[in-house]
Length: 121
Image (cartoon, rainbow, N blue to C red; front, top):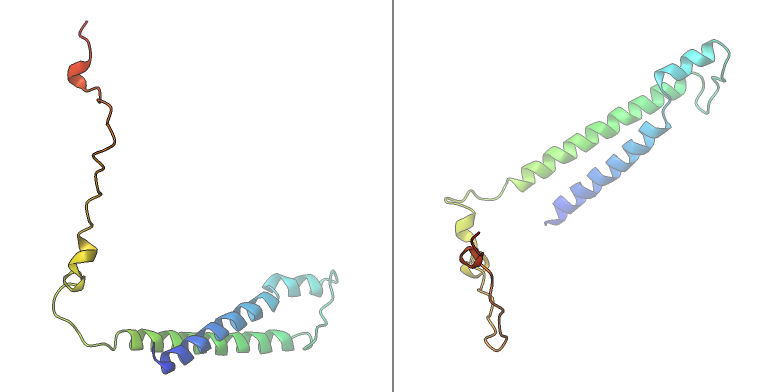
């Protein structure tokens, strides 16, 4: 993997982790409804409505960075030269044809009862 692809992958992972954290911090839409009727406090670190705007915009920016990084990784993954033929044709023969297990002739085998050895009634 090239250094550029590794850098894009690191940006993608960091944006995904930051996006998960921001989503978990955000309040649901029902949280403001309870605060309007006096059952909860609406004050927060960013103010009553400032947190929703800041967190939702930050999430949108991180989502955009994540999708751009994903598209860049997909482009880099498909940027290799096109080959003619099947993928299976490039596999070595030793991998496709497994070796037969070795039979030890020194170990006696017990006779196996077959259908012809079942007594008739």
